[in-house]
Image (cartoon, rainbow, N blue to C red):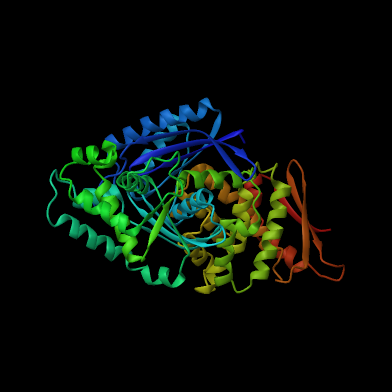
Length: 512
């Protein structure tokens, strides 16, 4: 891990880069960079990125990669709604990889909300009260309720300042019905989850993103007070938000907004839609006041990266990925003790085979999570439950994992029994070659671990591996001298084929 880390937020309206160095409990920002790219456009689903938008995006990211490189910072990049919805997103991702070497993670709306919450939490600093957070982006708006590191509710809506501008305010003049129509659309979208959020309740309210900051600055300007050094934790009321909407309504042109409110041109054209979204949030969720958070997705991404790399200590209670995996297992697995023991055996095998199979350390979590979730499909049906497990994992929006990581975990779990990965399996063949290798290696290990607990009673206490040039010998240690593990060894032996293939060695099993 480099001394510095860089977080790159590839949004619908703008790209944000933050380079920081880890310090005890957090990070210290070294430099920031923002570029308004307008990657996504469209009033409905943003189904395709235009060639011009892709070119702008690649050019911007090339420059940001150079900035990160000048600081010798390792880059972690995530893309949100515009890329998430685009059918040709792979074209954009490939062009960025070729031009910059950056690997883009496309994250779900719920994962986006989690990272936003992590950033806001560290800016606002309220850990002992439940907090309502809203973030209005160019393509989507995230709403969540969290307490400390736990997200209790999260939802992403296709309500973004760019998206709604394209839909309701595309003309040069403001149509009389545009604002009422936009307002009704926003409220009808948000009201679906209002009862759940209001029943859950919250004690503090925070808003993040460029739209929230622009509105906060308009309010500050209207108060006639001097501008603070930082807008972080700046408080404003619901009535002030409504007043901003009224004031924006009264301005007939973008140039007038720029002059009257001191807005940047690339914010002035979308601010009305953004303000209407915030007004809708205020009304639907019955907010009285809000505070602005200077941190959002990119800072949350920084914190998450530092935690993943072990540069900030985090216990299991604050591990979002582990918590969401465990919650899914608790809901669906009828034999959780078996799955837990399989995970222990599987990770022991991983540690023993890490060098031989050239496994990367971060893959260990994928194997552990797949082990814990391999049998969740039994909640649907025991027959073909490995296929049901894949579907449940893939569609559970596990927090703390990227879309790619969820796919890997789901496929490793899917191949814990029955067929091994094959090119004719559409989901497997759709993976990049490098990820196919991860799935094959981890599934090969998992199949052995499941066999070694065939009796469902943890009678195989531990495993070790003797590695030879042409042979792997897996040695199973029974829990006590009286435990007969012959059935477990037989079951593991029946499942050794995939591990033999990926290791290019014969696999033998024996008792310690």
